[in-house]
Length: 285
Ligand code: PAF
Image 1 (cartoon, rainbow, N blue to C red):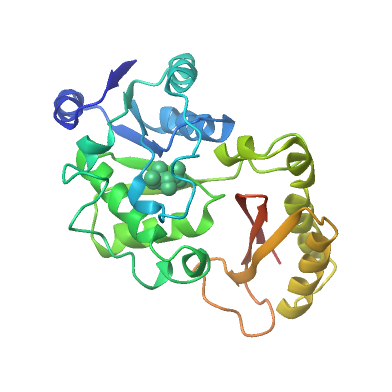
Image 2 (image 1 turned 90 degrees about the horizontal axis):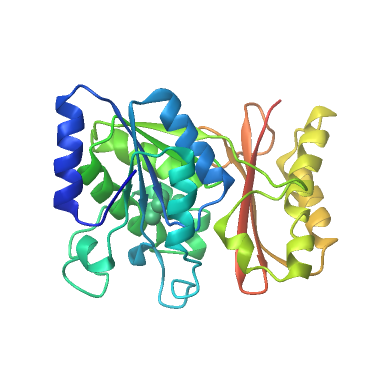
């Protein structure tokens, strides 16, 4: 496994791989890796000849009041996990390498369009612009054939797919199902920021998602009734503060008038202390 921190060095290494006819799979991450990330790497290894993982906590997707400084980091541990996984290249640039203007700023951004201002975009207005910008930069640097993203960040995946289609970026974006811990909590680097009590309480998210699917299986189609049932379930756990419960078209993320007629995605955002957790489930009819 090669650890590279300079853009020019990564480009040179990957140019040689491409010339040798090898396909390149790419997994962008912000590090503090867990089994969910390693599942993305595994998928890349199954489908591509060479796998590249980037580790970069991207400042442009955090607002000044958000948890950029607190975001967990442990590069030595990440490298050990990726080495064990048999990853080929790790790209771990510093902030100035990615944003040479200094201070994690850039004058050109990728505007991720309408999908970036709904749902999580209401709570984090510049978040998806920052994600679209850094993912575009990383795509330009790595030039992967395929790129892998977790379905847990459902809106992020939708934003990136849309960006790639709209900007004709030559990469296939592949969504990989959410990996969960034994009690159902979706794997996330942010889980490590939870207190022991909040960690135990956070299982309520996956329980609420399961409840919604059970109700759909029993014939419930009303968006209002499903949303109410999910909110009531989440409220059984007083440690969690509900920020958003949305049921949207699974394909387009458009609002659904009243009744489910096609697969819909249930998106949850719940805060435990200072930590915002998200989770999702596609409700199959
Ligand atoms: O999902 C993440 O970890 C980040 O948003 C990403 C895609 C690596 C961009 O910084």
